[in-house]
Length: 243
Image (cartoon, rainbow, N blue to C red; front, side):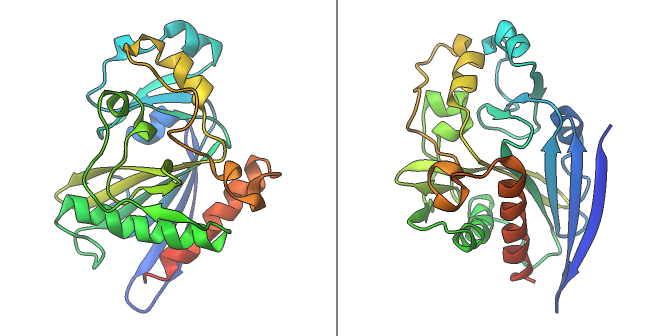
């Protein structure tokens, strides 16, 4: 069962709906477009660890014994890309919904990621994020990126010294777009290597991604609850600035 709370921030032109949900990743991914009628930030906290695969990935690549060892559910999301590992209070997960009638909505799929990337750049600068870069070029990454989401790099995604810090995927309907965004507190290299051991690719133990506690001094001594709460508040402030 998903438990959710609603809130709202109003601006001169638009309002921002804030949704907080607590539940299984499988339950949240079952309805990715539910809030696309209005500009919405849907913050999700998972109650159980999960390996989330992109829509085109082969579940036979996943180690069943690793799923059992990590007590993780296996989820297939409705957008593309590689695997993502989620754990309770291990990451900031937010779905940002932009309806087609919203001034932030862009018909160009690639350029639309840049709008969300700019919002994240502002949010992370508010919590001490410096020397960050937003990728503005084409999609980068080969076979490894098709296996592990954070091993590739797409437009709008945020990096620190070449390592991905914020990952994004997008789903669209005739009503608008939803950007599913993830930033880790500490990146789960070991869990992903164990879970995707059957993918037939060499998965680096370090280097291609970083968590915020690994690059921001402000987060280095914080556990999940205060760190994720601070990130959430900062992202809401950045979203309010677009109203």
